[in-house]
Length: 150
Image (tube, rainbow, N blue to C red; front, side, top):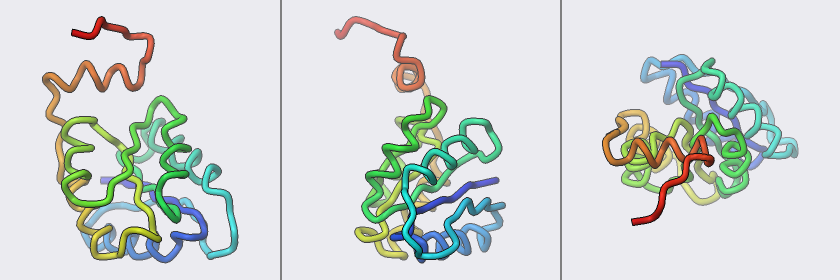
């Protein structure tokens, strides 16, 4: 599968680690940068990643910054993306199963390489359950859909 990955300066090392890990697993990886740890703004890379995923150039995205929070907010500005900030394999699996997330976000200052690899594996292995979750996911990308709370 084709996966895009982007980070800010705080997560360049984790990005390189996860890029190589995904290549070893046989995935095609589009590294959107940055290449160095020189200061950059995470929204720029989050927006770029979101565009690549939303337009279908990549099936999934991996968004990284110091905490994972800022870049996940940037990615989620694009209505074609459902980016989940995760910290463990279970939350990564639920992001796919319940929310049909197409981007995973993690914080390099909070998540070590081994845990990040485990989260990524769980995310990529996950499948959307559909069913009762499908209508909710539709509302995430189309907020005009409204239904009375029951």
